[in-house]
Image 1 (cartoon, rainbow, N blue to C red):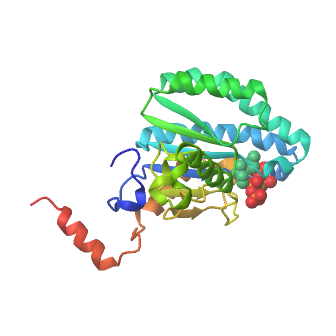
Image 2: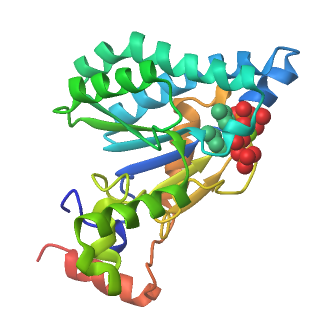
Image 3: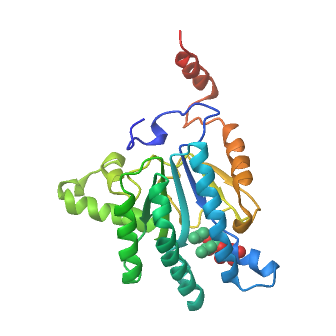
Length: 257
Ligand code: IPE
Ligand code: IPE
Ligand code: MG
């Protein structure tokens, strides 16, 4: 499958490792509250879960891992918590980028950069440049990201580049302008922390993604929890609108003669 081809166009084999996993890392605040710690202690601990998940995805051969770190709605949180999270991104970029580069990981950051501090934007650009030729794993971090923002910015950029599309355009015209046009659509979506909602994450791209929800709080998420989610995914039959019988035929045709 080419890098740009939509996952919804072709049927991945049952039992395969998902190529693209997208995660809503939720439950940091509750993890901290249960320990009578400030919410930010949960965010700090959540970084360990990020490291464990990135490592495990690399080992399993997952090609794309996308982590929702800060939504366009998270600005509504107390100022101190927002500042702490922004500082956490800065130190993550300062401390981990060389490791990413040396481990074959390409870092991408998606979301609006408009409200981000200049220093953070500069670090993001440096990290993206430094790791741009890596292909073992593409790690995308969504910061100040919203699914609706993504669709709107894509329409705006498309019309700017191709004004002739204003009267009529289709999915394949728009797709190249979405923030994650470099990745296939997610195969597996994981949300930790027990809530069963999408919270304005990748709205367009999740059209045919398998949705997995776990009560595990993000700071407790680890390689074992990831393996559980993947095992669950491997038992799903992805039909993309077709019938079970049609899928059986496709599989029959795929078998080597
Ligand atoms: C997710 O954990 C991290 C971010 C949204 C940045 P939360 O901070 O939402 O944790 P809960 O949901 O309050 O437990
Ligand atoms: C979603 O978590 C966003 C991130 C994990 C970054 P929230 O905890 O902010 O989601 P809602 O607002 O409870 O749905
Ligand atoms: Mg939450």
